[in-house]
Length: 227
Image 1 (cartoon, helix red, strand yellow):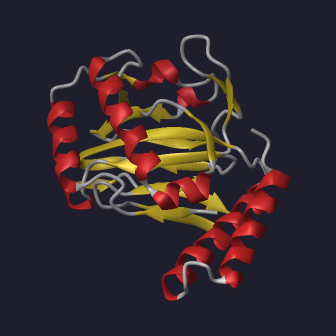
Image 2 (image 1 turned 30 degrees about the vertical axis):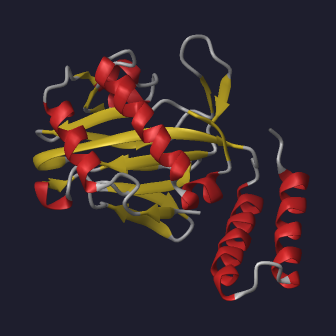
């Protein structure tokens, strides 16, 4: 499932992020690439321990926790601390796949990458190129969102960032381990939850049909979740 969630960050938050990141200490992103990816990766990143990366990353994590669609779609068990990157002057990231297992910073537990997330911090009019191309069974999907928007997609998808030929593309990326590893089960739970949310406002608080649907949702989650 590929899901776009608008306004994960409010415009005022985006402006604050951009102001901070304009003065940040960017470094060559090749330092975090794998042995195969290093040949196709040309971008800039903030270091993991950079104060701006830590503070702004925590603000993103808080925003994700407040976003009902993200919570419903991801059923997140673990989230990688957001990584900030910048593409300019032809910067790109060729076709690659994300690592299946990642050791969380500071000798933390292993994270299984079920979902990948890109949060856009630059408006599309600010740069040319820089589309996130995500391959799927029906072909590639090009994603280029308004600042503050996020795309959530399966980490097992091949993907790339096309060259930025004008301006600057600034984003934050992260990876999520879901409590429900099976992608089809997770998508069905999301669809069921969204249907419940859509039906609930028109029903009484004690509506028996809504209560049964909620019960089914939680029993399915209980069956499929492996926290």
